[in-house]
Image: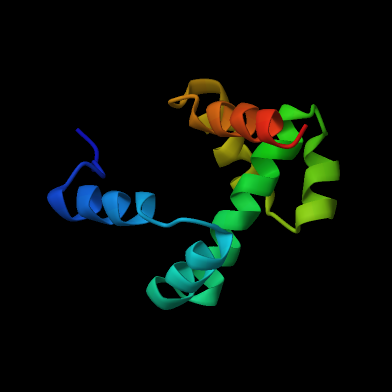
Length: 98
């Protein structure tokens, strides 16, 4: 069996994230807890997921986000065979941006 993120430390981290009240608090917290490159990598994967959900091609996604085809493939695999969390979050964001 592969690695799992379900550990006590990860659970506590997620609980801490859920206490953040707005994007300003979120920005400050992630600036403290992550390196700039870690945050940018996560943001890039999210941008890739959004574009793939909008039916953009791998080439368009790569050109717009700068992501490698390996990263795009990995995100696409998560979209197709993962926990549907990208879809859930993107749908929720759509609902709040109308």
